[in-house]
Image 1 (tube, rainbow, N blue to C red):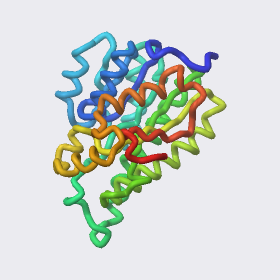
Image 2: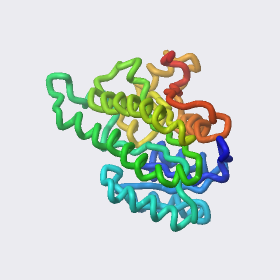
Image 3: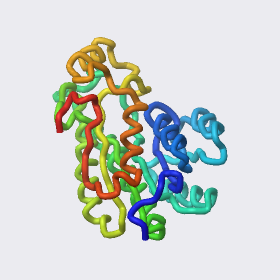
Image 4: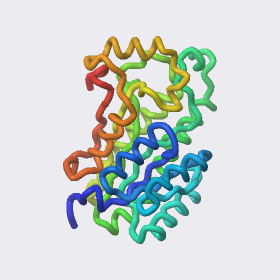
Length: 257
């Protein structure tokens, strides 16, 4: 079995792919010639509009990633449509969340329910997609899983307690999965960003926050979703064939990992 396969031979599934960063991920893989499944939960119109841009390469499928049966059905539908198993999973789906520090609960207000919502969506969703992908990846002798993290692990400058805790748990899962799945030639990595300019999630972020980040970043600008997406494509590419269990921070150098 090959240690890697070209991007244009991969079937990529991106969760939460209809809008924001997800749409940029779809377009980045499409540019490289991959077949791409556009997973969405509620954004049906946006997902199908995106899929219509290249119907031979793109397929929109609705599934709530926290629903294990729905995720299993999505993988089966993708395989039936394209005639091959999903080889590459990008866990991008995010439970409902607004990146506005002024509106987030303080430590006094934080509830276990808020933490569990993020754990269920972030960690539970990634677990469901990983389990659904394993049989096909093992059949292909190749697999790539890339989880989306955050630089707030190292630089918790805003009180996104629930979001950051969920992503931190996902980093731990990334590392343990990489150890467990490495013998199957399946790599598992994380790419962590800061605030991106601009996605639906960051639309509520005050302009002053963007300016502050830009001023404190070596590149003197806020990373764009397209720039972030390119780093994720790297982890699916043959150039990253010996990289697993890693967390790459892509934020213009704001946080040094």
